[in-house]
Image (cartoon, rainbow, N blue to C red; front, side, top):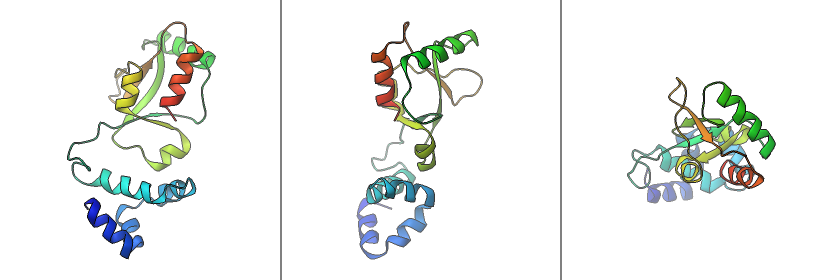
Length: 151
């Protein structure tokens, strides 16, 4: 569905658009946040072959849990990761799409934005597991940047 087709369908039959893309939980969650139409456009474009630009999106990183993280918490988790054989940092999961359910339960970051802010190598045996590397010491400034990226 092109953006023009979406606009036409939205004016005529919003329910057809919603049924086409599914995810009632995402629709409700994003509607409650006031971005109903924007969420629908994004969902339609992300499901179109090649997306809006014809270039496949790089994807998202999901950080489990909600809420901002302190420098102390990030530092403690980074030390635990290092002791387990991972880089000094915290774990995230790579996904092709950031679902609305993930955005309700967890923090989600665009991979390109996340990688521009932090080195985030694949780590461990799971190809979707990545570590957001943090410097030593993990300062409040690092925690603030991390919380800006993972929202």
